Image 1 (cartoon, rainbow, N blue to C red):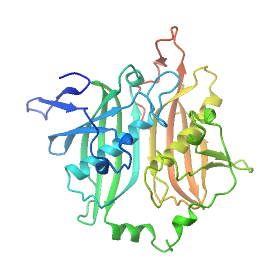
Image 2 (tube, rainbow, N blue to C red):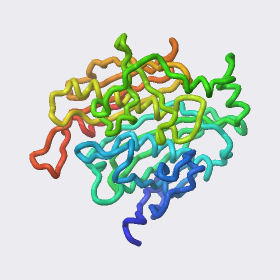
Image 3 (cartoon, rainbow, N blue to C red):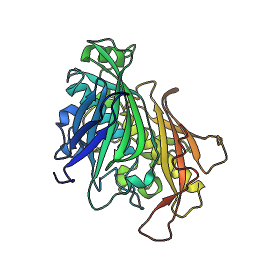
Image 4 (cartoon, one colour):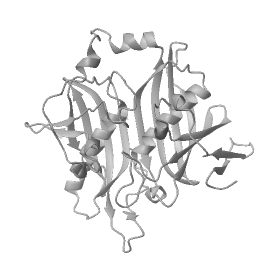
Length: 353
């Protein structure tokens, strides 16, 4: 079959077993309800195959362009597509293969990725075909009302391994979700309160945070100089469907934009910097109706390298609702405009976040 629609993958089996031949299809997205998306255009998963007891191959297609997750000026795919693709993959496997009912609520607790080959993410003349070699794990699993699960994936583009990523979530039924969500507090009227403006903060221009459209900037600054996450419930990508808290991907987008702002001001290289690795931990829900401050801290280098490490804490009231650790690399402009290169001393070094 045409390589645009099918990718053959040879999957090494366990020790002493045969190699598995598998073909993932990229013809069309899976059902949007199976990845918890409202818009078909926001579904990246196209297929999945079970190749072991807890091992799956998941296919995804990344668009050549996207309203929010667009390629950067050098043509590299947005790294946050990794997180969104792993999120969709976990939800799809949970419903399609692992018996999680469609009505359950999914709550993320931590996620990470590390890019080991940036050049594999360069966007060409066709959409990128992405394969996740995913290992499924049950973690603190107490069915049927609470399911705990984790996916760890090796990510390849067109057969070329380029990243590792993972995500942990728990899924609960509606009654348990409401008890966990509103425990010790009143949840009535919060949807209306969410539409009331937060503390006054000036939205940063899109160009300063690495975005193209003004409405895609989610980073603001108050008169006191605090960084603030700006919540727009009408944003078609970040708030694809209604919810009662700030999604993990919105918090991550805000942290990424703040990292971009700080790191690009710090590096003198004309091409700026590229995001190499992310580790996110979410100990609590972030409510829609109260401001979230983003507090950044530059981490001391673990060794002599060009890696910039940032830790950003998302704080609501006086509680940390998320922490985001990031690694950024300076980008080196190539001698010719057709190629992009990265610092060989740092790309692919395997340093964990």
